[in-house]
Image 1 (spheres, helix red, strand yellow):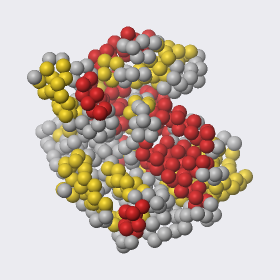
Image 2: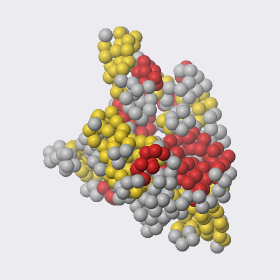
Image 3: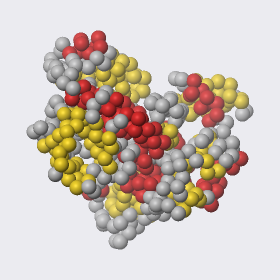
Image 4: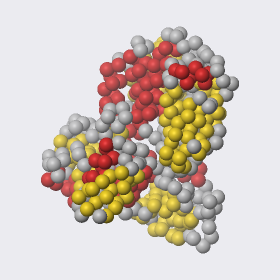
Length: 119
Length: 413
């Protein structure tokens, strides 16, 4: 059995979590003050996932870029590949908030969506 | 110059102002919101990272998404919005507010004003760092605006001074966009920002955080070429012999926010530590027609809190405009041990309930907050980066209002 110390980032409380692992299996989580802490620890100890936030180029509009995010967390290890893919993308103005730029982004099951309108 | 009579005039179109205007309009007040820029949302528009709205909307939103929802609430409320409108002067007699916009000069005669203009970044000049004055030095918020709103990279290799949340967020944003972030320097022996930002913005990407470090010198003629980093002792004095040069073309400063009070500082008493106006539990200042909310009162951690304060200020201003808010006896809140930021500054027995917000000066464990011996609240872990929020119910408020002064302190329990 191995023990991993993590800081929960689900909210600003920043609970200090202890995860006990057997191989890749989570045996126990302690130190959390809410159920989201346990959920976070179970995922973080095995495969850290994050929401990616970045910009996509806008063509034919007043705005040069539009802010985007993955609509659910994707594996952190994919971030370099994700940024390389984002640099190849562009959208044509105008774009509404919540527009899907790419479905099933890098086969993660997450969509890349705009987080503001672009003109 | 045309004169407009309104019930509530809100100055500032960020989270606090949008919430205040919506709340005032929902209370039935004829409300106008003034925003000097072209779009509403304030700093939210350039905060493209997630982490907003967990309290207010029970889901995690990015800044622009949070602003978008607040804008919808504002539109539904019936408040009138004027963008491109800058306040030139506030005349306490009347009161009257002079405004310039692309359509010319206007004068407002409001019954109540909500000041919600946010904070400004401490500039490079205020730090008095020796060396040259090349280009390539940016405040974190300016770099964020350039990158995330305008799509312009500030440089190629960056050093960040200050580990406040904006500095940490910018470290991650710059790293993701291909800028080499050489280090984040923090003069204090602990990080300035939230723990989750230290984890998600630095540790995730292997960006070094140098605690007890600052910039001793800036190098470069036209463009920044590098900085000298130095370790500091517990009195923040540089330790000779610990200097090292870090090559960089960009220096990002995340060294604090200061509430913006220029147009009201001659009108209203300020709190010397918060640096914003002194307010009561209803966000009313000591000038009865002037209310204030958000980061112009004190610098808060969460936009959710700022929006909540905005709502309370807007609703209070609407009630004042209707003549429903008689003055009470002010009882000052006094800082005892281990309290820096503290909101409100006084209670006056007019609120049914209130919330108190305070900040400790250094990380502490196993402490309790004591409010005038009436309310006591245990805090297992207190950090300067995380404000402590204490609800005060009606019973507590009526007991506290009987006192001459209320000492607020944080002590080992």
